[in-house]
Amino acid sequence: MDITISSRNVVLSDSLVSATKRKVNRLGRFDRAALRADVHFSHEPTRSTADCEVCEVVLAGADHRLHSRAAAGDGFTAVDRAVAKLQQQLDRVKARSTLR
Image (cartoon, rainbow, N blue to C red; front, top):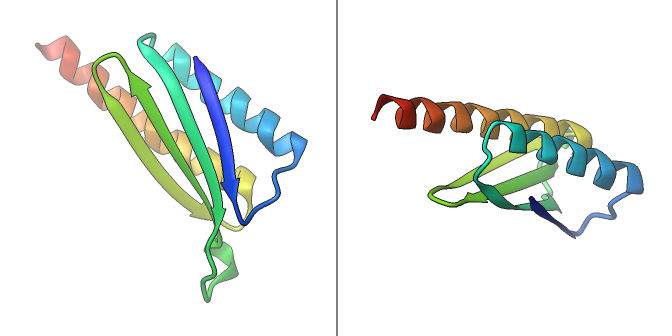
């Protein structure tokens, strides 16, 4: 799977990049048809500092395209939440395809 990581208004540490690659690669176990994953980090000024770091993940497969967006206080938690959302979406796609 080809993983692209980008950021806007955020400096990404090496540990965040490696953790992101590891977690997104884990999604490949659930979807063998996943070809590409685009991960985008950004910092949004909000009143609450608990939701200022945003992570968006787009997973493109052969026959589907899944998108998730999660906000948290730090990048690691945002990635965890976004990957959990994508895993739920992949479970639904897999259940739908086995019913047909």
